[in-house]
Image (cartoon, rainbow, N blue to C red):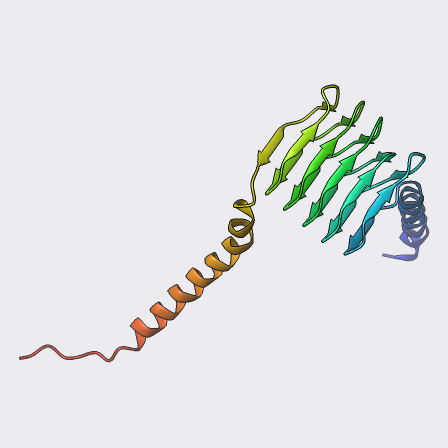
Length: 166
């Protein structure tokens, strides 16, 4: 069978897919920062916005999710988020006329929202700073228990067998 017959349609399909992804990336770019705050202006349309150790201020439109780890999220007047708004060890503030199409979730902080702020999904808040150590230490606790169990099994298997007295 001649594979050259499939080469042109495959290249054409690949080209269309790459151009489509490039156009989508240019229209709604994603932003990820570490230690530097992100600000979405009134006339900006962006994709996902993620911040590690910093905060997010949204005045425009976010086509995806807004997520912070160790920072706060402020969604100001008439701004819109098409996905979820999630803050770990930070607060979420939703001003007048804000629309969130997904969920609003806060771990180790609080949600403050204006009366007319709209959230289409669920609102979940594990408030207070007591959750932060639990969230951060739980994976290490699990890993420690796993390593301890493996070491116990290895030690148990190494014990010499003692013959029973005759």
